[in-house]
Structures are given as structure tokens and as C-alpha cells.
Image 1 (tube, chains in turn purple, yellow):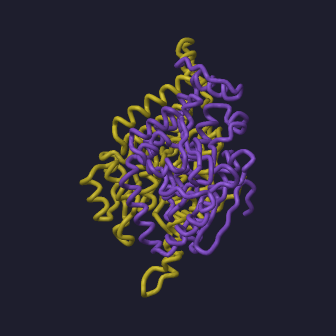
Image 2 (image 1 turned 90 degrees about the vertical axis):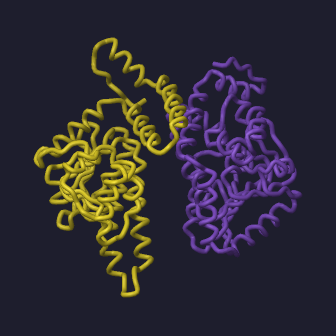
Image 3 (image 1 turned 90 degrees about the horizontal axis):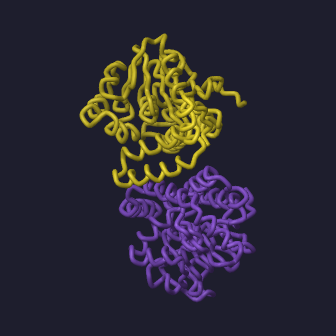
Length: 262
Length: 266
């Protein structure tokens, strides 16, 4: 299969998925989610592959939903619900549950859906000057991909609330300090650091790796299906609010939103 | 429309699709081909907006007598099972069962005869089970397969600990009426009234809002194995969403106008 929106390469035991729409900061549309899902599926089924690496080309890792695509295609509540449920299944849950370790190389902006990818991968290395944030709150939204559930699991409640409530961004270095990524390295060392980590994991027993990943997930992700469903439904309720429309309008008009609580 | 060889797939019912397992000479055992066709039909029924309820039934003496183990057994030698064949079967079966498990529309199993092992598991995945008086139902994995991964998980949630132990440890099959008593079967009817009863139930559900049915099914399933507090919040979030739907408004109008509501699922 050929890909239009990602680059999918296999080198030795490592499969690398590079999000490749740099002109829109690797924001996600339907094709891109589908292609990421296909690549993950291939990497999972290919017995020669032991580790998956995800990164972005250009200035961004991933900046979440492509708002132009959302405006054109996700124009009903049902369409939004169908899209997010599907994207959660083929991309986020697939990363989380696949029996091989997934490493994110956070090369730049990781916002909204981008930070949600960061919350489901197993390990993450960031460029020191990467810019990472949840951002949803800025637009009167919340993360339909599970950010309000998974960010607290990673960061603890205090830091998670700071990041989610303010919608602020932090640097790769700060992300390392609070435990959102394993390590922050100078930008020109990112790829070599990730490659070395991937090579190290590829030497380990795939059986022990698969079982360990599954056990850790079982410990941390209690009742995850119901909780993700709750996040998605709560998102949709918020998405039908006046505040959300105001958030999007303000973004398009490049002004500060005025929220009324409706 | 695709031509099926191991099942019949009928969408002529009013909002009701019927999938009939159709290898009567093999007691509708699950071959790789049948599983692939079952998956395709269920995928179609899930995506086709005109379909609101799915009935699964079998042709002949059996509803489904479980896996067709030929493909696995023929490739096995004295040293044991052929691992690749075993894996291929499990992957194909899982892919088919996933489409039943994940179908957001209500599924009615119309159990016309033997429902064993994989057939028993289809009953466990279904939302409603209507059985013929002659149907005989059991887990039966204990007889040859040692254990059924779906049965051990779902049976205790549906029929309780002691009855599950008895059914799963003995491998016995029981008359449908015994399973009605313990709640695995909703209703037992004479053999010649089975499809009529299944269709009556299906039609009744198909007249309700597809949106409502979808949410009821999803929350009820969550409620079986998630904490009450999480499901509570989920149910009320969904209620907020329902309040925004066209179907909810149609329900209110129909009530005020004393007529039958016409739901669209929007």
C-alpha cells in the first residue's frame, strides 16, 4: 500500500511512521488517521518488526485535528461522534494495545490530538524546544481522544489540571521534568537518540515485551472502555455548546473568545 | 449485492436484517469461509442505515455447533496442533465475532437447534435470545476443546457462577427451557413459531429510535462491567446528547399529537 499523508519505513526490526503533512503542521484528517491505522496494523502483523517509532516531518509532531477538515466533514454531532470513535479505535487504542512498544519522537509542536498520541505511546523522547500542550480549553473544548483521562494518569492530577485548564504549552525540557516524556535532547540529537532506544528495545524478547506492556496497561487503564466512552460523550455535549462555537469563531477571527457558559 | 455461499443474508424485512448460517449438513459449524461471510454480512448490517435490528439464526437441525475444526485438525500431527492453522482459525473467528460484539444495533439470536461452543458464544454476544422448544444449548468446549475463551468470561456475567460452572465443566447441552429459567434465553417457542417470534420482537425494536437503541445497548453493556459511578455520568452525558437529537423531538411531538413516532436515527 502506498501512503499520501505519512511516510512508512521499515529498517531492520523498527517501523517508522512519519506524519507528513508539514504544511498543515501534521494536523489530522480522515486520510491521515486511516493511513496511520494501516501502518500500525502492518507493523503489528509483521513478525520482523519489534518496535514502532512515530514522529512528524517539519516543525510539528502533530497539532491535532485539521480544523478545515473538521469544518467541512464533521458538521454534525453524529459525524463527529463517528469520526472520533473510529479514530480512537484505529489509532489511539491501537497504539496503546498493540503488542509491540511504540516510541514517539516529539520533534516539534504536539498539541491537542498530538498530545493525545503522546499519552498512548509507550515511551517518548522530545526535542528540548518542542512545544507541547493540550490546548482544547482555548477553544471551549476537551480532548475527545481521552486527554482528560490519560493526562492525569501520566502527570498526576495537579499538573494535569494545570495543563488542561490553562491550555498552555510547555517545552520538551519541561515535559521531561514533569514526566510527560522520558527524555528531552537537543533537536539535532533527537533522531539518533530515538534510533538507539528503538534498537535497544528491539533486542529484548518480544514475548516478555508484549506481556509486560499488557500487564502495565491492565494495571493503569482500569475500566478504560467506559471511561473513554464517557470522555467522548462529554466532549460531544461540550461540542454542542454556544461556547464552542464562540471558541472556533474567535480562532478564525484571530481574537480573544468571550465565553458565556452556555 | 455480494453472493454468499455459507450464509443467507436477507434485508427484505422492515428495518430487520436476517443472517442465516447455511451449512445445515455440517450443523452450521464455523468454517473459515463461513466466518468470513458472517463478518462481511455483519459489517454491512452495521453500516447500512436502513438496518435497525439483526437476527442471527441457522438452517436445519442446528443453530451453530461451534468451530469447524477440520482446517486445524487436518494439519495437526501426533506432536500436537498445527500452530499456524490454529492461529489462522482464531484470528478469523475473532474478526467475525468482533463484528457481532461491536455491532451497535440490537442483535437477536433465533436459536433453531443445537447451539454449542462457538454457537453458544454467539448466544452470549447477542442481546436477546429466542429459542425453539427443540433447541439444545451448551458450552460443550470441555468435550474436545478444553475451554472457550468467550464462554468463561461472559457466561458467569449472564447466568451466574454455579450454573456457569456446571455448564462449562460438564460440557453438557441443556434443553432451551432450562436456559430460559436461568436467563440466557428470553423466550422459548414452538419450533414452527420461532422466526415469527423473532421477527415480532425485531420489528417492535426497529420501530423505536435507532439512536435510542444504540445508546441503550451501549450503556447497558458498559453497566455490566464498569463502576456504577462512571456509568452514571456516562448515561447522563448521553441524555444531554439525546436531548439535542431530532428523534427526541419527534418523540415529544408524537406524544403530544397522540400518534406513533417516526424515528430516523438522527
